[in-house]
Length: 340
Ligand SMILES: Cc1cc2nc3c(=O)[nH]c(=O)nc-3n(C[C@H](O)[C@H](O)[C@H](O)COP(=O)(O)O)c2cc1C
Image 1 (spheres, rainbow, N blue to C red):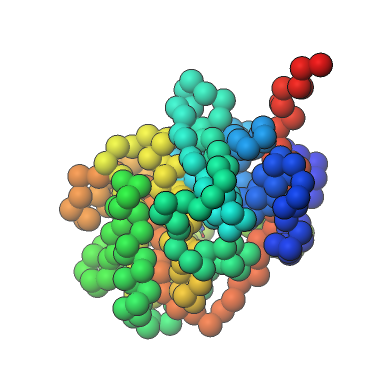
Image 2 (image 1 turned 30 degrees about the vertical axis):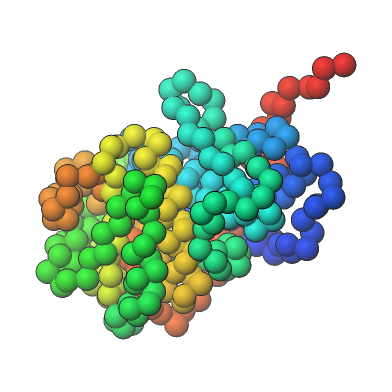
């Protein structure tokens, strides 16, 4: 793990600083300042980048992989997908058509290449996403129970189909209660696993989840050593019950490429929601337990694999931004030197 410090200063970005007249590499690196604002599981920020001219290569950093929480690497690739989406949104804003290619992690060093082509994309992303990049946060609040307004619901519902990712919007009380029960079971099982607790404690202790130094130390000790499964279960099922909508993203196949695409779609939804004043909260524990993941699939009556679950709703609370490591930490120094 890098010695560089976590900082919130990365959130203060001035689009006017974009180096429009400089070399394309500098422009690409500027786009990556938006990429690193993406959400990630435990705020682990498991991405790495290599800029080569107009190509940005994006990799999954396995040194930041949450091995105990996420043994199948689903959340690792989802998180990388979120960063890819931020990069593409910024690229469109600064006048590029970002063309994304996906690579199989078993045979490639980088899982995605974003090629910055000049000009506007044939199908641009929805408006308003760029401004949301520096505003979006994850909410952990109890929602106030207001139903999702019809306009926002319709806009969110339209996202995903063209990427092969299905969005399920659950708002009937019976299914939501069943999901709340799955969440409670998942919390108890995860908190019964010392490796899970230790890993969560490690990231809390680093301050990645945003606490002050002392609060982070206390949080790490509590999560690592105390039996808090029942407390988490009660808290999280209440959070789900307060949400007018629980959303699940699913895909027909269950591999890294589908998971990266799901991350992209999730991030697009999170940014659209942020622009519309709708709070978003991923809750992953059910999906982290294979037996509960398949029960969720049955509940949704889908043959697809559930990839990501999050609450949508309203709250007056505006969370503080969580910190990030500075961009330099994520830039690979592997560029091939130009021939003499
Ligand atoms: C794949 C993925 C899984 C996540 N799972 C959870 C979760 O189970 N519980 C939670 O409170 N937040 C979850 N989050 C949110 C992260 O904790 C959050 O993105 C991170 O702390 C950075 O904060 P920010 O989103 O406010 O920038 C998840 C995010 C992603 C991308």
